[in-house]
Amino acid sequence: MTWEDNVRRAVPYVAGEQPQRSGMIKLNTNECPYPPAPGVKAALQELDWEALRLYPNTDAAELAEALADYYGIAPEQVFVGVGSDDVLAMSFLTFFHSGRPILFPDVTYSFYDVWANLFGIPYKLCALDEEWHIRPEDYMAVNGGVIFPNPNAPTGVAESLDTVERIVRANQDVVVIVDEAYVDFGAESALPLLKKYENLLVVQTFSKSRGMAGMRIGFAMGSPKLIGYLKNVKFSFNSYTMNYPSQKAGVAAVKDEAYFRLVTQKIMDTRKRAKEEFRRLGFAFPDSMANFLFVTHERIPAGELFAALRKADIYVRHWDKPRISDYLRVTIGTDAEMDRLFAFLRDYLSSN
Ligand code: PMP
Image 1 (cartoon, rainbow, N blue to C red):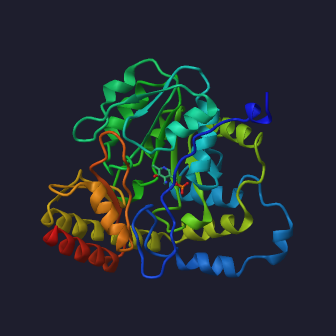
Image 2: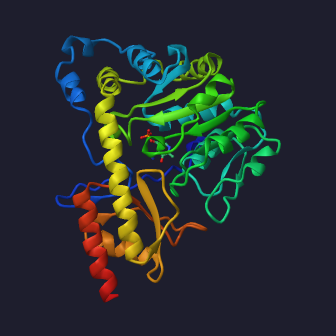
């Protein structure tokens, strides 16, 4: 027996690389190409220096209130965490406790099976159809809970509110989590369903549509009862998760709705242009409602393109996994970044 026999072995999630090279184009982790709302800068510049001496508010109450106000729900219906990864991890720990397998798509956010394995939660994968859509019937079997992103990652495919409701309605004896990390780029939120379903948790983030991945702010919305259970687990883990500057910055971001609309619209406009350009270059892709496109080329294998792009300091994401190894996930950047990407691709495809 050695000390190592007592160690919990985990297979960690592998995040997209974060190189910092001047002139590089980073389209690999779905960050926002634009800075946060101007009010965020002001809020950070005006921070109460003395307050850093103190522990922050345990519930991020001011931020939870601002979010409740914005989404028209009660503050007791909001849970704030350190990025939606933190919120989702806490939710797995809290809600998927039955011992029965939880259900999620076979092609989806690759953190779900990492948390399930870490917490010893059994799971079953439900295959997406050929158009990368969820088949709601797959979620009608006995299960210990359901989670899926809407829009899904890395496909970008969105399900209608009707499809989401069918799944929630059929699963009122477990918790259903809809991960809406990318919902602000044109998809329908499940938020209106909160009025009807006590077992629904909607999770969102400031990392994509609010340009604040570096601040680590995520949140969940659900019934007060559901949020109460989530808080009990969080407070059994760490009382002070979100730091004071992030709480202040988050409030300032939520208060600037005009800037939020401007940025999300800009990204949707660039996405439209990018779709046309990819199509012209011989790429196919499912219609995306997210801030990325999931593209496959008619001739050149994705792995080869990925390597060529990387050599040119253009970073996109590629997974050598079943069903998706021929695809690249490309984040929507600024128009100038996309122009450079397309200039490279035009050049590469004409000589290879
Ligand atoms: N959910 C999905 C589907 C994602 O792609 C991501 C981003 N990697 C997250 C959640 C987590 O984002 P964050 O922790 O930055 O809020």
